[in-house]
Length: 220
Image (cartoon, rainbow, N blue to C red; front, side, top):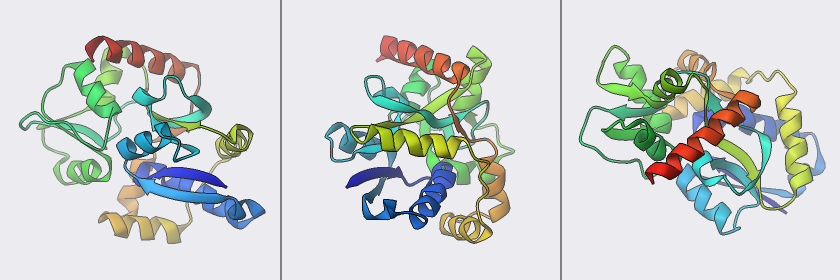
């Protein structure tokens, strides 16, 4: 049995749909089980080996065995924000909290679908920072939020990662509408958002990740 940890955010929707289609077309469904939660909880369960594979927050992936796919943005990401409010960190995220410290941006860190909804309602406001955009302005590099890592079944996980990265993936309208409705946004807004989410880690992404881990270590 492969226990796969899944982040319950819209930025992983393409991979989640890919897995569903992959499972429905093979015997793989007999050996996979899901655990859905927020990034910080997935990180903890992965570290405790209660999960075999998952997208692990970058800050926690340093010594993990990982594939060549992750979650990253080349500029603005719209779902990792620091609001111009009293300083606080988001309990759901390890990486975003560390990034705010690296960039020395103070305020209320908010991530995931709730941050995206905030942006969509307040996009004309100047009362927040997009952390991925601020990183890009400073380092001229993409920012990697997570990597697909594994504790076991490495060959199977890397095969899935390779299949996912080698295909142009289009989300069926049924899943798009269902996910958008569940999160309280429109399918058009969800499609727009996913244009800014990328998965295939290349040289620049790995360079950016290495730099971030070095800088995060210096401010922790």
